[in-house]
Length: 594
Ligand code: FEO
Ligand code: CA
Ligand code: CA
Ligand code: CA
Image 1 (tube, rainbow, N blue to C red):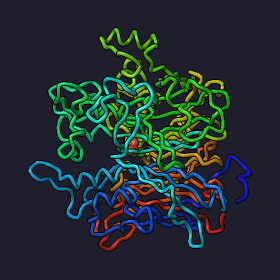
Image 2: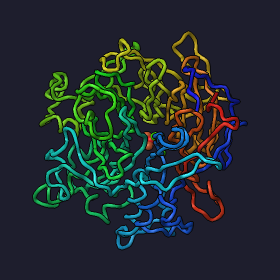
Image 3: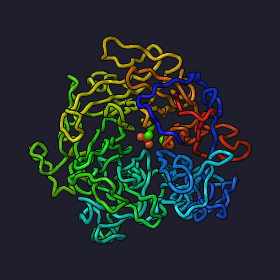
Image 4: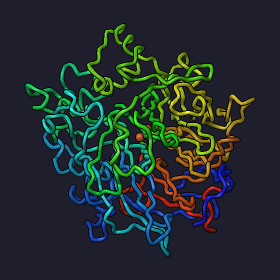
C-alpha cells in the first residue's frame, strides 16, 4: 500500500441522511461487510454458534464475546502488506442476557443457575482475532494469536495497589492477583504496541449487603442490594460482604481489584494481563496517549464516565525509549496521576492525585479524611479528586489526540443531572441532553506540563440547539448532514480526520431528529462535520480502527435490536441480535472519508 502522503485530510464524501433503517448505511461508493459476530468460534474447528442460543459456557469461552466496544487493528508483517493482515483486538463490554440464553436469564430458589452465570462471565472480556484481506474481503484466520480473555481469566495487580491490605482476598491472600476483567468499554494502545482494556461500569457486578460499606465500595456505586446480573447469588466472589474474620477469608475486597486499566500483550497468547493500578481506580472509559517523545515521560489521558466525574492524566516516572516490546517494560507502574480543573477563563490545570501533594494533604485534613498510603489514594481516586475540587464533567467518554496539532479532544456524552444553576464554561448546558466535545492544548505543547488552554469544539444537538466552535468569533449550528447527540466514541485517523460515534438511547434514539446511532467525520480545523455511517435499529456505534493505509475502517455495532423488534441485525430470521464488527472499504480502493 502506498504511504499516506498528506496529513490534515478533509472529509470529502457525500454526507448521508439520518435514518431508522435496520441495516448499515454508508455513503455511495463505499461497501460495508459484517465480520466477527458474537458467538463465532475462534477457530474454524471450534464450537459452532447455535441460533437457538443454547451454546454452553465452555463453548462461549471459545467463541467471540458479546457487545463489542473499543477495538484496535495491530498490523502483522510477513508475507502480506501490514494493511492486509493484522490482529483485531476488541472489548466485550456487557451482555444481553435475553439473547444469551434460550429462555432468557433464570432465577431458581432466589439464585442464578451456575451454568448461566458462567456463560455470562465467558461472554465478557476481550477477543484477539487475526484477520486478513483476501479476494472476498476481510476474513478471520485460524491463528496462534486468537485468544479470549474473559471475566474469569487470571490477572495480576501491578503498581501502588499490588499487595495492599485492601485487595487481599480468599483467592489471593497476598493481594497480587484477581480473576477477570469486566465491563470493558473503550480501550487504549500503548506506544510499545500493547492493548489496554478499560474497566468502566464494573461496580454493579458486585453486591455488598453489609450495614456499612467501605468508601472503596460506596463512592463507586457497589450496590447494597441486588447486583446487575445476580452473579453474587451464584459465585461467592461477587458477594462483597465481610463474612470471615479476615479479608483473606472472604471476598470483601474483590471489588477493589476492579476499576483499572488492564494491559494485554496481544502478541503473546500466554501472557497474564496486568491491572495497571497507577492509572487510577474509577469508571475508566478508555486511555489515550500523547505522541511519545524519546527520553521524555509517556503521558496518557482517561475519563471517568459517570455523571459529574472527572478527567485524569498519567505521567510516567521513567522516560520513554523506543523499541520497548510487549509487557517487558512496566512504564505504567510508576508515575503520577493527575485530575483536571477547567477554569471558566479557558485555562486549565492538572492536580496531582498523590499522597505527597500538599494540597491533597490539606484538603484531606480539613475534611477529616485520611489515606494510609498511595495505594489507598488510588483505591479512592474519586474521593481524592473530590478533595482537590476537580471539575465535575458531563460524563467523559472517549478522548483522542490530533496527530497534526497535538490537541486533545474529549467527548462529554450528556448529563441529565447537571442542574441549570450548576453549569460552568466547560459544561455549559444544564441539563445537558445532547452532549459536547471539548479540546485542549497543553502549555508549550508539552503534555507533561501542568497547564493547558481549552475550548469547546462542538455543542452537539439539533439544527436549532447546537454550535460549532462557539468561542471562535461567532458560532455555526449543525445542519442536516451533521446533527447528532450523545457523542461517545472519538478517534483520529493518522491522516487527521476526527471520527465521532454516538450512543443515544431512550427517547432521544426512538423519537429524536437524529435517527439511529451513527458515525460522523469532522475537520478539526474548520469544524465541518459529515455523517458517514448509520447503524441498524437499537444499536450503539462504538469502536473504530483502521488499517495503516487508511483504506479499511473497522467499526463495532453494539447491542443491535435493543428495545425490541421481530427480526434482528445482522442475521435476521430466527437468529438473536448479534453485536458484530463492520469493515467499510471504498469501492475505488481509496482512503476512507476523503
Ligand atoms: Fe461504556 Fe462510557 O460507555
Ligand atoms: Ca462508551
Ligand atoms: Ca455511552
Ligand atoms: Ca455501550
